[in-house]
Length: 73
Image 1 (spheres, rainbow, N blue to C red):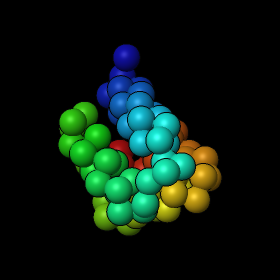
Image 2: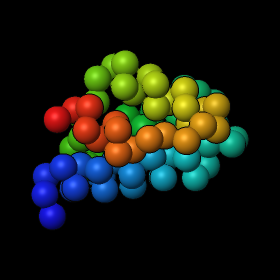
Image 3: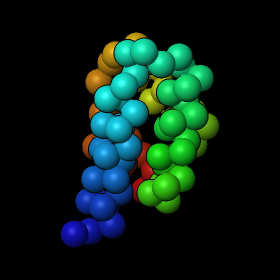
Image 4: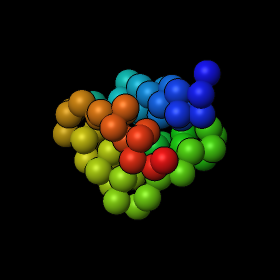
């Protein structure tokens, strides 16, 4: 597995984890959980990326994990 593949898989797991309970969570809670999950897997995203993912999850939109993973490389 390449570093890019590992990053993509880790981000997919983070997004899946946060998305799984987002229906009842506020945007602030989603952001807290996203930050926590990213810290756990050691993935850094910019503030703009974190905000975009938080908004996408909050709005029920799909997060393009492959594109997100490639942005940080």
